Image (cartoon, rainbow, N blue to C red; front, side, top):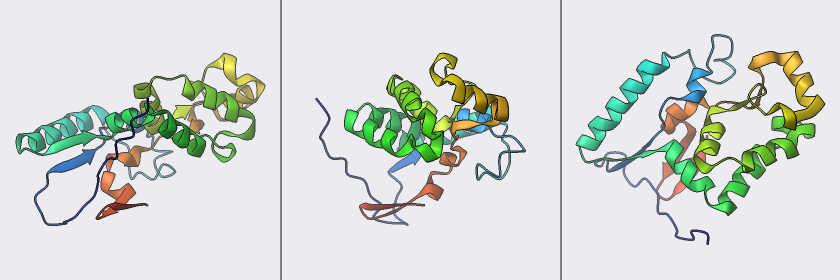
Length: 179
């Protein structure tokens, strides 16, 4: 049975005490940053991912030490895609002909639907390259894409800007805008 409980989110003060915060840990999306793709992925530079992870977890620990509830985006997304209706909506909006190519929509959709919620969340944020997509599923079209683009081609691009959760959305009371 689907979880129909309504979540209450909102920002009601820009100067009040921080009680709850959403963060996104550095991970697969950041490991995929290169000097040649960081501009296209809207990121200023490549990261030393191991150091970024260490600093991020230190930052989260300091917030928790101050009584702040820290919500991690990968975990929230995994919880979200565990709800069938939410998973369908996300895949309907992410696996499109403009994103993955007309010939691969059904194959990519089927592959993603078969992933466990945590792995699907990791893939939606970290991206899906043509090289890691199962060879037996993609057929000739995928082979052509791989030959033409090599390891730099993504069926779903990584989203390294999720590291900066304030940049991607703006919360005003109980409303949200996607930037």
